[in-house]
Image (cartoon, rainbow, N blue to C red; front, side, top):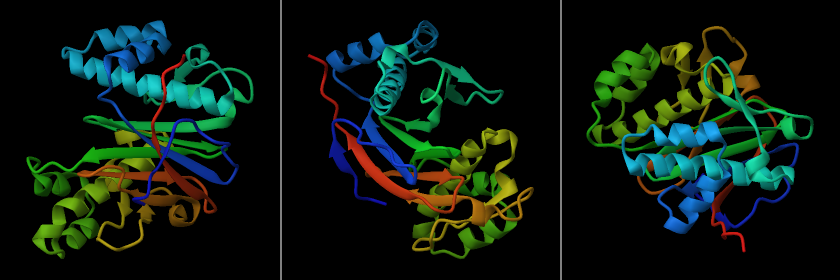
Length: 249
């Protein structure tokens, strides 16, 4: 999906919809200060542990954006939202319904953040910048299954790098949706990756019906970036937005 509509605030999140937002993390000093003001103490402390100021500001923009979008969906003040983390570090909202009715996933790469929201289903998103400095052959041999390696090698050389990133983000999105991260093993799930092919989870070693239970979507949120979203349902509609927030006041 490559059509991203620019909006300042989220609309209603329907029961059969996934809302995807892409947002810049390289923001003005005014926006950076606003996002920082929304963070909890532990988030501020984590931002302070980054060695590079730019990385700290990216983190603050990502968490501040997440809080702002969630606050709009839930009609709640962004700085009042509270998060808990599972054993693999995936955040979720704590509190009473409807606060826990919205599931979400976040990924960021360089100066862009990707955010996914859905009601009542597991969700995972992943975003990667296409890098020409990465040895994709070595990574593919380590993390791709044999069928994926064969599919990758069957492509013209000029298509292999983008296809590698398509496969990588689809695997990551699915594993993040499961809530297990890399502990599951990237080679334990097989996905489509060739250009023009629908994004599909072809197999997972512990789920023979994975392709019927999960929906996968390829994303092109910004030039030079590839993303993916995985949702545990077979009946869902994806809506893509580029966030253009205005500062309060």
